Every structure is written in C-alpha cells, then in structure tokens.
Amino acid sequence: MDGKALAERIRGEIAEEVRELGEIGLATVLVGDDPASDIYIRLKHKAAAEVGISARDIRLASQTTEEELLEQIEQLNADDAIDGLLVQLPLPDHIDEPRVIRTIAPVKDVDGLHPFNFGHLALGHPTHVGATPVGIMALVEEYDVPLEGARAVVVGRSDIVGKPVSLLLLHANATVTICHSRTRDLSAVTREADVLVVAVGKAGVVGRDAVREGATVIDVGMNRSDEGVVGDVDPAVAEVAGRMTPVPGGVGPMTIAMLLRNAVRAARYRRGLLAFPGA
Ligand SMILES: NC(=O)c1ccc[n+]([C@@H]2O[C@H](COP(=O)([O-])OP(=O)(O)OC[C@H]3O[C@@H](n4cnc5c(N)ncnc54)[C@H](OP(=O)(O)O)[C@@H]3O)[C@@H](O)[C@H]2O)c1
Image (tube, rainbow, N blue to C red):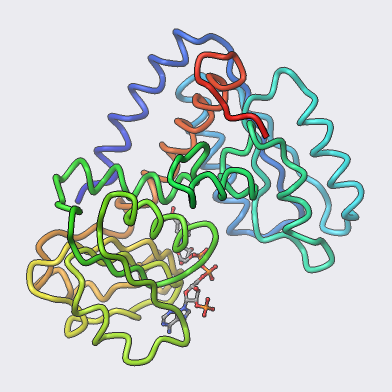
C-alpha cells in the first residue's frame, strides 16, 4: 500500500484548498532538543511550506517551566493568525503533559488530543482526529479494504495512534480487538485479524507466523536500525499478507499529509465554513 503516492496526491489537493481559503497558520511547539522530534518538526514545516500553509516553528529550551509553556500556548490560542496548533510530544518529564494538552484551544487542536476532541471521537462524531489514525483510514479506504464486519486487531493503545484508530475502525463497523504489552499470546490474537494495525515501536514485534494469509497489515512503527528506519512488522510478513504498508513510504507520509489537512480543517472551523460543536 503506497502511502507515499497517496500522500502526494492529497498534498496536491490541499495546496488547491489553501489557494482557495487564503492564509492558513499552523504553529508547532517543541520543548527541548530531542533529535527525533526535531526531524518530525522539520518534515512538518517543509510539507506545510510546500502547500502554502504558513507554519510557525516555536522552539523552547528543555528547562522551560510548565507555566511558561502554558503561557506560550495561551498566546497561540489567542493569536488570530494561528488556525492549528500542536505541541510535539513527548514533553520533558517535569511538565504535566495532560495539563498542557488541556490548555490547547480545542478548535486549534490538530492532533485531536484534547479531551473535548477525543470525547467527540469516542462518541462517534469526530471533530479533530490525529493525523496518523486519519492517515491509516485514508489508506484503507484508498485500497478498498472491507471493514464492515471485518476483524480488526490493533496492537498498541497510545492516545496518538492505537486508541483513536481503534475507535475509527469501530465506527467503520469492524469488530475491534486492542492489544498491548500485557496481552497474552499476542500472535494468537493477531492471527485472527483481517485488518492488522501495529503501533508498538519495536522492530519485528509481529512476525510471519502472526499474520493470517491475505490479511491487510498496516505498520505504523518507525524504529531506527543499522539499515535505516524499519517498522514493527517483520518484512517477511509481506509473503503472507494480502496488502501491507512499507516502512518507510507507508503511514509516515500519510501522517504528514493529514496534519496539513487537519490544519485546513481548523481554518474552516475558525472561519465558520464548518461547524465546530460548542463546548
Ligand atoms: N508513521 C508515523 O507517522 C508514526 C506516527 C506516530 C507513531 N509512530 C511510531 O509508531 C510506534 C508507536 O508509537 P506510539 O506513540 O503509539 O507508541 P507508545 O505510546 O510507546 O505506545 C506503544 C504501545 O505498544 C504497546 N506495546 C509495547 N510493547 C508491546 C509488545 N511487546 N506487545 C504488544 N504491545 C506492546 C504498549 O503497551 P502498554 O500500553 O501496555 O505499555 C503501548 O500501548 C513508534 O515506533 C512510533 O515511532 C509512527
């Protein structure tokens, strides 16, 4: 499943929408100097610039206090030029992450992590939903993967990937099982999957014998190795899977494209072109 090609097409569509809507502002806030976070932020800014979104790259020192960070977010909440706002995670240990996320104005929360947006997703009328889960669903739709009544297994239960994608699959009428580090006999569960989403962060956590013949396999993992970036799924799984996303070139580019789409969505909400539910 070619995420790179689909993402490229979507970015073209977004560029067109940005031309129609006019100026759109996206702000990212990064605290500290984590090298992986730095790479993700750079990719997001490069992609935003390419579609004509004005992105503001706010970098704060690792010793920034929680109060200082909250103040920065409040400023961005009040800034009319900013439509979408994301705080790159993880934050340094001395900062209360849930409190920071709760401070982001829900209408600008392009990562869909604010309890307001997450609650709407859980209730089945999504507002802002994170770019990775939305990107996974776009790939599944592009390749006409049947979800109605299908058995979907999601490995990983993070707020950014596992939980939201599980909810989206559930709303698409799949029968969803969520696995995590305490799941007993993981491969027995994953073998049941028609659609398998793996978001763990450990190379090879799903092997060839853990996948049913013909299954659709979405590999979200991005793990650094001597051979470069590798996924969570053993590449040998491609021999049994019906369809599979590569790493790199699968979910990664879709995430970037969908973040841009979420920024456009935020602009539509803020301009009254789309209704954002009242709090
Ligand atoms: N391609 C993209 O755009 C993109 C976007 C986001 C993330 N990622 C990548 O996706 C991976 C997951 O990211 P994340 O943020 O969701 O990670 P995370 O917050 O660390 O969550 C990992 C999840 O995997 C579970 N887990 C850990 N070891 C396991 C095992 N042996 N068997 C089954 N489950 C296990 C954990 O279970 P517990 O809850 O029990 O601890 C947890 O729920 C990472 O490689 C990350 O880099 C890629």
